[in-house]
Length: 172
Image (tube, rainbow, N blue to C red; front, side):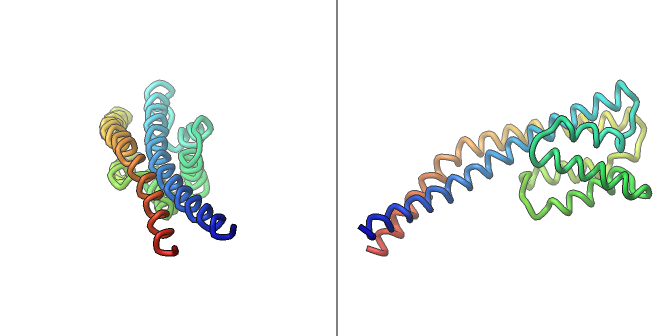
């Protein structure tokens, strides 16, 4: 009886671990899509309403979900708390805070770091070009992350169950 319960618990734990790892990949994919949405909204705000980047970050955070909402809200808060910071510096500071949680893939993080270094220091037209270039890079990253998720999801589940079975064989 206890042996069967132990077997079930080990298999369940390994399955849940693999599920969480697969969900992490899915979350990175969704975060990239949210980042693309946020940058598109930022481009629209800059183009049509003639607002500064610092003003748009707070408004954008209201229409996003999950990690990206928290990220843009923190950027907006950072800009309002420290008036000496420009948008790029505030972005970089918040990105450092969020670096502990891998909410973006390393390549996407590099793309967004490059964006933050150029953001807030140029004219409106150049800002829009900067956002366009970043959106193109994010499109490639979204495609890569989608393929990565589709390819590795089944592999992660299989490895989780396989690891659970291997542990069971060692214990029996």
